[in-house]
Length: 116
Image (cartoon, rainbow, N blue to C red):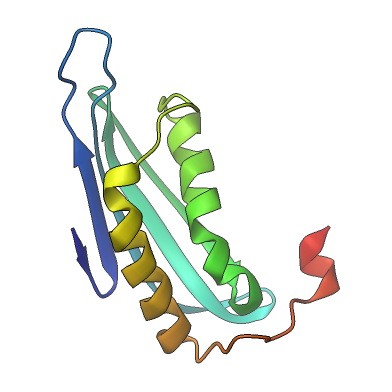
């Protein structure tokens, strides 16, 4: 479920071998080491284990939040093969909200040092 500044993704474990998760991603405009950007906080549970982690992304990379969120979820126990598909539409809404908050336009340049 999406609302500006917050995405909630949940899936119960339906079978004994399933992975269940309940994850909240909150975000806000912040000053990063590279200038304006977004501050993200991820918290919740993956297979009953709680986690809480934060990360910052500069404006020119903030559109790639899903990649970083997936990396953090995997680090806390979500198998790599698990797709959080139920949130695809919500990810699109979140992406658009981030673009608006940071006044990002198609074709805005990415700083080369952010690609290293």
